[in-house]
Amino acid sequence: MVKPMLENKIPPPIIALVCALLMWGISALSLDISFSFFVRIPLTIVIFIVGLFFIFSGLISFRRAQTTIDPLKPETVSSLVRTGIYHFSRNPMYVGLVFVLLALFVFLGSALSIIGIIGFVLYMNEFQIKSEERALKKNFGVEFSEYQAKVRKWL
Image 1: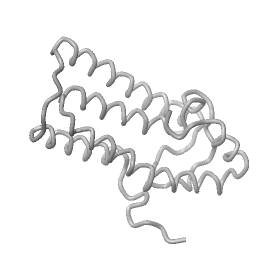
Image 2: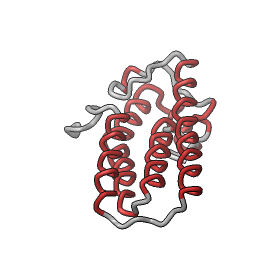
Image 3: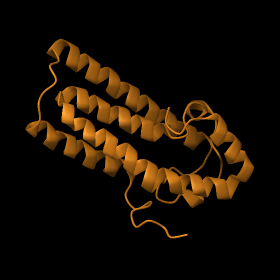
């Protein structure tokens, strides 16, 4: 099997940062969505906090399981984490990054900046999650397949 060139090469937070910068750039060139300041800012803050909740819940679950959080080396995972936030999502840290990007989308108020969120999800599915799931399947076999059948990839 040929490994795609970008697979597990760039840390997901860096991908999210690139997408955020893309969104910021696009917002300067596109039409605005009309949001009242008194709606936009509180909504941005709430969505951002939800994102942080997902990210930190995922990190805490990994720490408790004493397994690696290094997304660039999925083959080094030592245990299959299925508790906590992983009971609801197989990729809560990535879900959290999507919420952070969604908060930026609301803050910017630019319809076309949604491209950054879509790009992030597509990139993560193709170049990060696929390889992670291959590694988990190799390391945990049927146990991972059963988990995969019960819990959604994103939400």
